[in-house]
Length: 74
Image 1 (cartoon, rainbow, N blue to C red):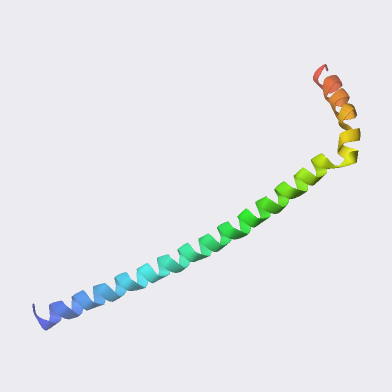
Image 2 (image 1 turned 180 degrees about the horizontal axis):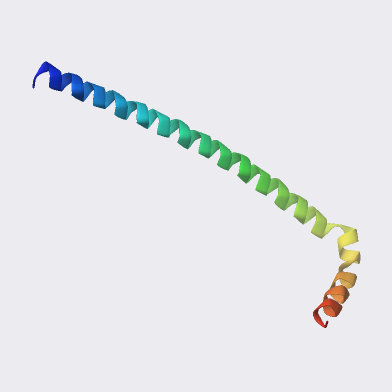
């Protein structure tokens, strides 16, 4: 293999390594975003469960069902 071919291969190898590094950083950013979104989903699920378990939600349940009944009959 000539020096010219070696330099071309080294240049190509460097370009590939650079691209892989870029993809790895992109992947890490996406994983961080996924962790943030999962935490938000967990927090929102807890908030929803707290609402469903609240006394006011339980007391107003019959009113919501009655409203739904009349809404559906229109």
